[in-house]
View (cartoon, rainbow, N blue to C red):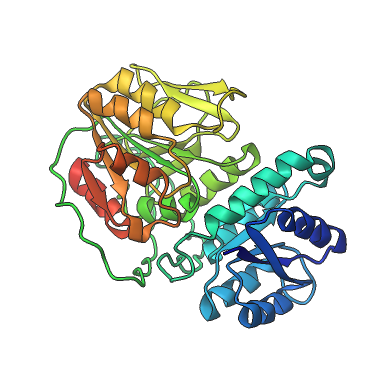
Amino acid sequence: MAVKVLVVDDSGFFRRRVSEILSADSNIQVVGTATNGKEAIDQALALKPDVITMDYEMPMMDGITAVRHIMQRCPTPVLMFSSLTHEGARVTLDALDAGAVDFLPKNFEDISRNPEKVKQLLCEKILSISRSNRRVGAYSAPAPVAAPAPTPAPSSVSSYGSSSAPARPAPPPIPARTHAATPSSPAPKRKAYKLVAIGTSTGGPVALQRVLTQLPANFPAPIVLIQHMPAAFTKAFAERLDKLCRISVKEAEDGDILRPGLALLAPGGKQMMIDGRGAVKILPGDERLNYKPCVDITFGSAAKSYGDKVLAVVLTGMGADGREGARLLKQGGSAIWAQDEASCVIYGMPMAIVKADLADAIYGLEDIGKHLVEACL
């Protein structure tokens, strides 16, 4: 049965082009279009599409507001279109917080210059997210969060446990999942890990927010984050996480040094590796690799540098990136955790870990943060 799609955009040209691209795929059926957020809500309720493509900036009601209403009234996987700018990144992250599943750059030049590539990418995204857990309410986005209040000036104390960094406010409570919990692995045993490495893709921005906001400021292990994301987005995403978390989060730069209580996010369009001295190397993105950044690359370098002292976590995402890097980590004696199917937006990357018999533990999203604290503190 064909995947039913509702196309929402105030640009007549873009609505037609997206509709034409999708209709050319026999597995996809465009069942309707809308020109603003209010029409999108009405059409979603009337047509019950499997997937909605959504623009952000529209008259009468913007895309983010429409997504919030749709998630409340008829949860449906939403693919956002975004501009490749810092503001576009911020807006897209807001849309993901509101409940959108994934996003694609809205680039008219690419549509004109590489129509076949655009068609392949768009159709693959639509077919993949049509199978996501969004419709059954298995993965609800966190409530909007206000930026934390200004913190006092740093103290001069520098001993571990009394960091010289300003105190960060406790993050807001995160809503519980709406689906029944699935059987989970036992709580982990404590170990002196030298590194926590987390890899993710579709659904990852919200998943990472949920995990990292549960960590205390004195979390004792350095953290590296690998999220499939364009170059224009990772800086804005790191800034958002840094405001919400008690640990520090920044976009990784070449030469950064790993340290406790700091999470380094791999920059989009590039590759991140770690050496035995705890220094980060940022390398140009290799065109031969599908993912830039690539979880396998970072996991593999961590296996070489830290042996059995790595705790790797694979969260929601399409595909199997992270599996081969996890295999190297496992061979070195490190621990591998996978997110469970019920709490994933897309059960692809974690499933690849589980099917390869690499997972030491399988946890629901709400449990991963607290188990990281139990394993490392």
